Length: 300
Length: 300
Image 1: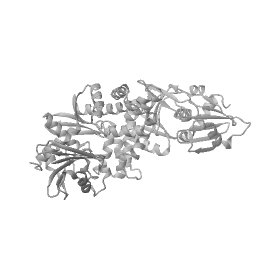
Image 2: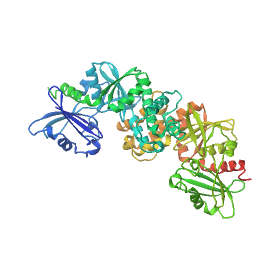
Image 3: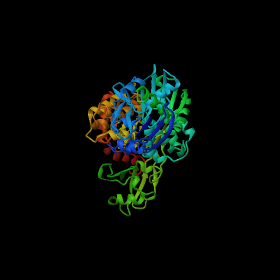
Image 4: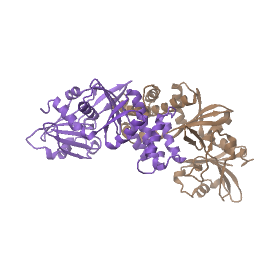
């Protein structure tokens, strides 16, 4: 089968053998933003051409924003609690006549006080970790543009919270009065720790207030301008961690993400007294999609 | 004398008679961003040309970012608590040979837990309100790109907190995943109230989490896309007000700002049970600068 992670900015695909082992991997920058509505079938045919052949019908399972309104087909979210079975039962098949049977995994939603939260793609990584570690109860963290903290109960993805940590970091370091003061430089660990510490202070005030401190610490020379982006990163990750640990009550977290992001969160977890276990997300999606495909009878 | 408010984006000036009454007003978009370093004297000479004449020496008092590192001359902040006398004693004179004696009012700083906070220009508005209302103790609010909440004690500007409310609103409505979903439209009062209510909920979570709700409420159709920017505004102003009222302990606030901003804050204050009094900031600066000039002996 072919496993695909098709996101907003990038996509990756893996060719798997009958036991789910990765035979080959490809990837490019043709995320949703680069594909015209109605152009997904053609785009995929080009992308996966080496693995497709007329007359055959290879099973393909996709996850990520490809299942959103902006994607190939909008696959309705399934409501948490969700598990392998509920994802497998709710795959959505899309029309494709180029030598493949294609299905998309649904995303998962939950609601807190009338406000929905959503994920697309992360649910597969969560399932993969649960299967690999044989866990029934855990707190998972998937850092990124929109970081997710996930509570797993009794083997199910029970509830989660999203934080716009990465997006806010990107916005505030690219323009505006904080970005103006920042100098590009290598990560500054001390400044990162200062930002984390600020986020933990009981009377640090609202985030919109604490953000102004990034500016004034630079203006007064209390932090070098080369350290301001690391301080901001610490402040935002600390704000996320402070809230997420209070919400989840967790004293240990299993993080799934890219190695660079995981490093920052590992330091933060130490400061917050949280046991930390890290997984590289790139390794997790193929087995997760294989598991779902098998459960759904797409592969036997 | 001539009173000048010279900010980052705009500048305004007023010609005042010997009793401090406004005779004429001018303004343009030549804020700091439009003036080259070293070009302030020339820029001011052109701006105020009708009011300047060789052989005379009219007193000019300026406030705002013109006294910052990016401005005409960097005037050191004076540390809170500050009052009329401490501002008047610390005016900084700048060289000008075009028929005027020019001084700049210092900004004010305070420090909380090692993190500085600063203002430039707002201190004059605060003094003006205190003088006009004959107040010794009050909580003031100056909404804007960087909103300020100010505690006045015993006639002095004792302490304050800045919130990047306006800047964050501008950033999040101009690009990124929230802006993508927003439709331009008239203010939506119901959506604004929903945002305020969300900010008051005890378990709404960190702001970076609540911000993601702007996206999901739009995705799920719980709010019309035309209402998302008003909801965001309510969420950010509510976050500011929640924090500032806890910090100040105030049950009444005197707000100084532009009429449009004041309307939003008036609604928010009502929701938060805060007595609200509003002043148009445009009317306050000339008397404030006149008061300081007289106290400093620039005018008699």
